[in-house]
Amino acid sequence: MSDATTTTAPTTTPAPRNSKAILLFALVAVLFIGTGFVQSWNTALTIFNMGLISAIMALGVNMQWGYAGLFNVGVMGFVALGGLAAVLVSSDPVPEAWAAGGFGVLLGLVLGAATIVAAILTYTKMPAGRLRTLAVLAVLLGGFAIFRTVFDPAVAAVEAVDPASTGFLGGLGLPVILAWPMGGVLAAGAAWIIGKTALGLRSDYLAIATLGIAEIIIAILKNEDWLARGVKNVTGIPRPVPYEVDLQANEAFVNAFSDPVTASTITVKLAYAALFIVILAALIWLSEKAWNSPWGRMMRAIRDNEVSASAMGKDVKARHLQIFILGSAVCGLAGAMMTTLDSQLVPGTYQPLRFTFLVWVMVIVGGSGNNWGAVLGGFLIWWLWVQVEPMGLMLMQGITYFMEPGSPLSDHLLDSAAHMRLLTMGLILLLVLRFSPRGLIPER
Image (tube, rainbow, N blue to C red):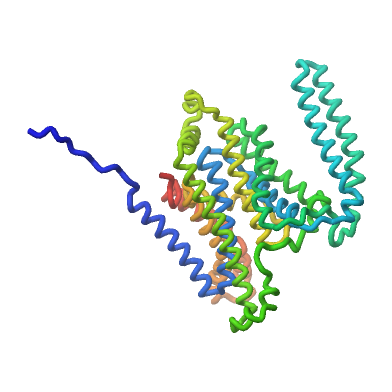
C-alpha cells in the first residue's frame, strides 16, 4: 500500500462574505447615484463628501472600540480640536491683537503649564502627609493667582481689537492642507493627557469621563474668544481647492459648460471628494495592515481577555493608551477636514451627545472590529441621517392627504416629521442588533 498522505488546501475567506460586502457597498453607491438623478448632483456630492468624513470618524472610533474595547463617548471633543487646528494653522495672524496682548497670553499659558508641572513635582518629590498636601495647595493657589494676573489683562486686550471681525490672535497663515495632520496631532496630544488619567477607569466610567472632557473642550472653544472667536465663529477659512467664483471668472471654464454656475459647484465638490478619497484610502490601507499584523493580533487578544494578555507579559494600559491616541488622532484629522469643507468653525455645532451617538451607530451597524464595516456604516448612516427627514415629511404628507387641513391630528403628524431622523436611527440600530448583532460586515 502507498504511504502517501492526502493534503487539504488552506482555508480562505468564504466567498459569500466578500460577495455580501461588495453587494452592500454597491447598494450604498446606488443610494448616492439615485440621489444625484432624483434630486441633484450638488446634493449627492454634498452628502458624499460628508459621508467620506463620517467614514473617517467611524474608522477612528472603530480603532478604539473594535480593536481594544475602549468606550470613548468624547468623539466630538477630538473632532472639535481638529477644527480648531484648521483655524490655528490656516487663518491669517492679527498683528494688532498680537501687539495688544498676544505675548501676554502666551506668557500666561506658560505660567499655567509651569504651575501644573510644579504641583506634580511637589507631589512626587515630597513624602506623603499633611505637609505635602499643603505644599501642593500653596503651589496651585499661588501659581493660579500669578497666571490670572498675567493672562486676564492680555485676553481682554486681544478681544477688544475689532471684535466684530477679529477679536482673536488668528493663526499661522499656512496652507490649510497642513491643518489636517495638525488636527490629528492636536487631538493625539489631548488624548495622551486624557488617557494618562482616564484609561485606568472601568468602561462605563471611561465613557462618562470622556463625555465630560468633550464638553469641557467645546465649552473652552465657545468661551475663549481670543482663541477662535468663540460663538462669534471663524469664517472664510482658506480652501485647498478653487473657489466657485474663480472658476466662473475663467473664460475657458465658462465656455466649456452650458451652466457654468452649477458646473463650478460640482467641480469644487468633486475636488474635495478626490482629496478625501485619498485620505480615506490611505487610512484604510494602514488600518488593514495594522489589523492583520502581530500588533493587531495582540490588540485583539487584549480586547478579548485582558487578564490572559497581561499574564503573557503584555502591558495592557500602555497598549490602551496607544490605541486611544491613534483613534483620537483620526477623529481630529476628520474634524480638520470637516471645518475645511465648511470653510468655517462653528463651536455650537459640536453636540457631543447627538453626533457621538451617530458615529457610534455607524460603527455598530457597519460592523465593529471591521475597518470596511466602519466605512460602510459611515456612508450608509450619514445618507440616512440627511435624507430621512425629507422622506419622512413626504410620508406624513401622504398620510394626511385625505385629512382635513389644519386638523390637530394632521398638524401633529406633519410636525412629527422632524423627529424621523432619531426614530429611524433607533429602528435601524434595533434591527441590526436583532438580525445581525455583529454588524452588516462583521469582524472576521
